[in-house]
Length: 525
Image 1 (cartoon, helix red, strand yellow):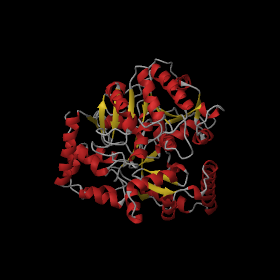
Image 2 (spheres, helix red, strand yellow):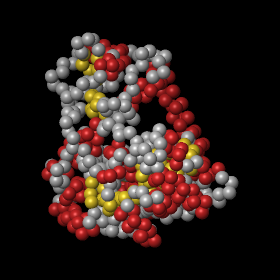
Image 3 (cartoon, helix red, strand yellow):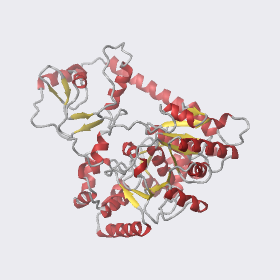
Image 4 (cartoon, one colour):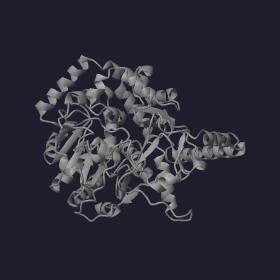
């Protein structure tokens, strides 16, 4: 299939990095169809809750439905051809499978090199401080030579320090490696890595979600980090201070359900590096490793063996163009349908009754992977109960940790008749439910939230005075309501790149958390 690259570039530039555009791709397929709908389609998608973006970003996207934006896309496409770059999008088979499963997958990746031969390899991200100790560099090179020699693909950011050592070691092992950069592929940052940049492109791939001509702005690198972790099965942090950007990558990995490893350099008394961030990660449960053999053992494979090929998830089949999986025609396993008995339904979605007297939510359908989901427990004491309940809990979210996808329709099927009597009975039961039980649930929730906050405070409790002046100013404006980066920039009249750097400082220090769509909110202390 021939891609209409002009409109894919327009689509990526209009939305920008860090925005979850999966719904647009699922509804319209190719961006040209989306463009042809006109600017009002943004308001419609926001009204239906299909995309969650700030008002400022929605205005910017709405303004991009014009010929001038297409002309900008033409200039970018011209640069891509002149530079000999490749491109891939989520509906392509060449697109990294791991990135399809993160909340804000890149809309378009520019590639210098080759990605197709590395789809099924074990990928391990290796990150750390730019200003690191000689001992950390030595351990990084040893680790990455072993990883590459054992058949894993090393993924790094091509920055100075640990990233550079990781890429160099993989190349010395005569193996492929991948570098993810925070600028256009016609720029090399830092400039001292120009030779390394070309070698990685010849023996693997350098990739970026930023169009050619994009300079290395500070705000680009936190967004770049989610790609490093998203492509990888796990991320290794070698050396990181308490405010290192490597901690952002580790946090992204945790959000994406990726594994976080910490090299045991921080336990060596002979090392002179700053390992405060590594110690914090270890306290939070990161896997401590001594070398590559620990990673291969963790993933249950021997060095030199390729990992088992996973069956495609629903979004893999759909987004990769294999649309033989019909959204409206599939069978729910009997055991899963029966799980939702009439007495258990409290979803506010309505319901329908099957012939055997069981109920399941109406308007909600669950698409499961071909394999990989757990068997149902026989009884409450069954050891499989915990895993099964975790699976069901994950199914109530947009995408489950086991790979299933919950699809919620905007309207109920017209041919399904609602059992009004049973629905009224359940509503009456809900209204007559004792207040004491409700209050107990609220108290438990508040207790859980308080415990989570206490846990965060135990790991991040820096002094406010150590923050930069801009960071302290931002703290006064933030609340527990998410706000977009561009909106905050307009409120404070501060350049976006400086604002992003200060927000990264606050996030590392545990005052602020980022959410998809380049939005930030305050973490209550």
